[in-house]
Image (tube, rainbow over all chains, first blue to last red; front, side, top):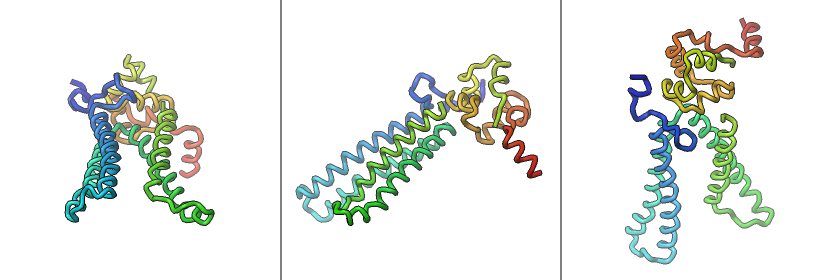
Length: 147
Length: 74
């Protein structure tokens, strides 16, 4: 039995996109599902609160917690994905995260100044856009660089 | 860093996929190392050393610039 065979669940599946191991793919799927659930639950909670669907104070507090818990699960899934990832995949993801966070930081730092130019006050959630775009761009560049 | 991974792999008649399975990494990682785009971690270098039964320094050598810098430092 080879070293790889003895580790069982860490064996690599060459048929899948990006050569992810089953464990890597398992956590990446959960991360993607979590991110989608977070977006849906955030919109749902916002609508529920603004349209007074939930009126009780205590219940409102609980409802607000829903996207927070979903986000916590999403972050946990991503951390487990990084733990399961191959060292090159991990490096690519770290670099992509750096791109995303740098792009988000630039937008967040610029936002107070562009208000002086007449732009409306920016919702901090907007920083998710450069974060996502930068992250995706970083992944694209990283995968190309090391392929 | 330069390496002889491709040569050592060929001597064993292994494909990149075979080596990747033995070393428990992705084929993309093996390809990136062989083409010099990625330098492996020390634990992975030790894994290669164990798999091919050769010392690490016979698999990986510093490239010209790094070797010059090293010899000047010593």
